[in-house]
Amino acid sequence: MAEHQHPIWRGHLRLALVSCPIALYSARQASAELHFHFINPKTGNRVRMVTLDDGTEEEVRRSDLVKGYEFKKDTYVLLDDADFERAKIDSSTVLTLDKFVPADAIDPIYYDASYFMVPDGEAGQDVYAVLREAIGKTGRVGLARLVIARRERSVAIMPLGRGLVLHTLNDPKELHDPEELFVGLHAGKPDAAMVRLATQLVDRQTQRFAPADMEDRYEARLREVIEAKLRGEEQPEAEEEPQRDNVIDLMTALKRSLGEAAEDKPARSTTRKAKAPAATKPKATTAKRRAAAP
Image 1 (spheres, rainbow, N blue to C red):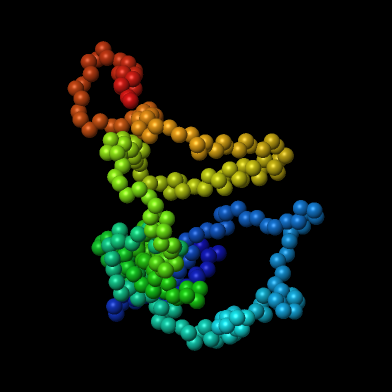
Image 2 (cartoon, rainbow, N blue to C red; image 1 turned 120 degrees about the horizontal axis):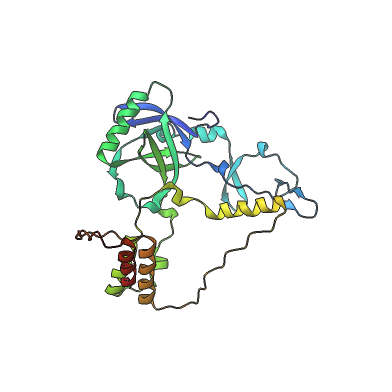
């Protein structure tokens, strides 16, 4: 683990009577993102955010602040570190694997933040390796609970390469009910012929997943804008937005899309063809195939 990274949680991973010390590290690297500051355009100076007492309007240092729970309007009970310490439960220091489910049983909408889980020291290396291999062989995901940022979260634990990764899970109560948005959608089945064409289009464009597929193209474009401003060069042109009112026949659009996809990535035939005579030119054969495409 890189020296500059600090664990966000330390404790033990436990399965029945077996346990090992572990540490969690954030999988997300926020430093790779673009960061902006609020600037006063008249002076070019950064704007300082000031913490003010709501009653006296006096500035207060953040280090002097404590947390408060509002139990009635504008009335708070104050809590200090000792109070939070007294509220600790077993999942504050122990990750107990008490349930396993198939890997595809958890809908992706429930996944939240990700953390790399590694042994905390040499003592737990063997136990960690055994648990990683056992979970990986079953193809299941381990469920547990963890207190992080002073809140107990349900978590899912699964193998990732030579290690384990932990995903915090969203509480169903935290998610909006999709039916509120889906209720107005048409209940009838779409045209079978159009579905068949759309399925062919999906098949034509099916490839292996690659991490590069998730590159933030907007940030890359924004970096180009920033670099151009720094060099005093002309700004790159903004891409035109597609016309939202451009109505086109769906069947025609699907057929055209299949034709374009065929030129970009010809579909592989599943049947064997007779070997072409030596005199046949490959270029002519390709031209005929494209001409036959819808």
